[in-house]
Amino acid sequence: MASTLHASTFVPPGFILDRIDRGDADVLITVHSESDNSPCPACGTRSSRIHSRYCRRLMDLPLSGRPVRLLVIARRFCCDAVLCGRRIFAERFASEALAPWARRTGRLDLLVHHLGLALGGRPAASFARRLQVPVSNDTMLRVIRRKGSPRMIPPTIIGIDDWAWRRNQRYGTLICDLERRKTIALLPDREPATAQAWLIEQPQIGIVARDRGGGYGVAVAKGLPAATQVADRWHLMENASRAFLEAVRKSMRPIRAVLGAATINPDLLTAAERLQYEGYLRREETNATIFELAKEGIAIREIARRTGHSRGVVRKVLRGQRADIFRVRESSLELHLPWLDVQWTAGERNGAALWRRLKEQGFRGCLRVVSEWASRRRRSDQVNGDTLRRTPSARTIARLMTLSHDNLSKSETVIVAAIEAGVPLLVEAREIVGAFQAMIRKKALTDLEPWIVRARSSLVASFGNGILKDRQAVSAAIALPWSNGQTEEQITKLKLVKRQMYGRGKIDLLQARVIGAH
Image (cartoon, rainbow, N blue to C red; front, top):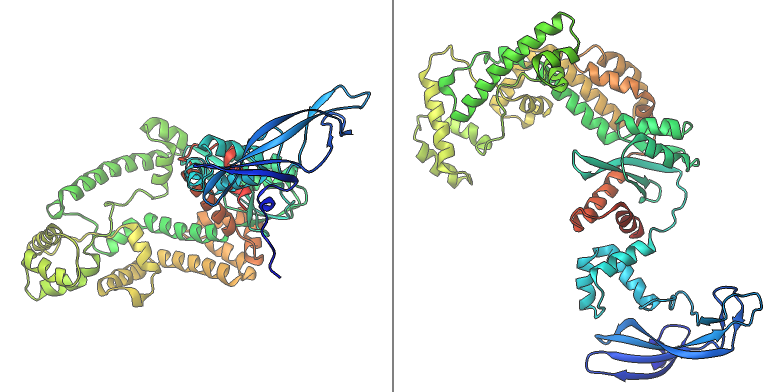
């Protein structure tokens, strides 16, 4: 049997409808409480002796596209308790229906709160006006701050990572419950002491997933010495790839010798490349000075003081990380170079004609790109055979050496084959890095110890030493299913919320929106 819809169903629970007045712009609903008594807020004694009545004007949920104003006929009661210091008090209602001093009903305040959590201040206020709920953006933020964050369930497995208030300047810390897949805390900085203080208050935590930075490892070791630390697998894979790239950079001199590009003919360079080459020559002079000082046994700090360079630059030089001649970027012609080589060999030397034929194949670059390539190629054909060609960048070589040979062009295959034959230490480093990544994917924990021994005597010795220092966390990453991927996802959500507020949200507002939205 269908139920009948009564007008009293439109008012909040605990109230009795008196009348409804429909105006041109809104709806006015007059109500009074269904209870004949109310508790004293000071002593809790319930009283039914009425002192007087007054009107409370509130906003309620909209009705049929019209804003609703609620007129509550409230009462003042006399408190008859002898020891109570309050003689007269205003009527109290159920907290979920109407809070003391509130200007909105509880159900409307809940709607405002959820709009603020989802959209923030100004966007939520704009959307609320479309819903016939006139609320300012400041009110939205006040409601979010007043409600705060929900009480968290004590976690046992967490992930911890940093996030940027402002990149390279200021950072905070996010803590994620990996079992429930939700953010449970935001800390204002990434100092180990701050994280340690929070962890000490959560002794039930047994597993902590973290990145490979040392700060959080120290905080967990001091705050939860019995907890198992798990290194993030994505960072392990990325660190391995970076270690191989550093090995390639250290080997650029033998690579150039193997590829027959140990000298450069400035006549074949463009203006931008010539500037880079001149900078390379200046860097070589600086590098030679640093190497001479290092051979004399002078410390890095003293070398930095004498040369005027930072300690970071001095370390890069001593590690062989400043040997690139050119900063190579991928050209729009990269995919079409094999075809251009074929056409050039067949006798087609006109840049404009080549460009028109490339356009038919989907090339979207301009004529100047093809013309400059043709001019450079023409000049290179005119010089003698002793002139040596340009070497790809370290990043390009690292990419080519880690790709399958089936995915390489003919010229790329020749380059890789020459490097593999002439720089065997680099081939060994590639095999070691590949073995590490395979070990992570297959969860082969028994292969870790022999891998560390092998890596420490290769070009990726620095990476191997880092794995040795963090052996327990790396072992846990291989053996356990937990990782920091979910924490990274929560950081992405946090970035979205932060950017919605143009980076001006404070820690309490960010915490309320990120944690309260779950």
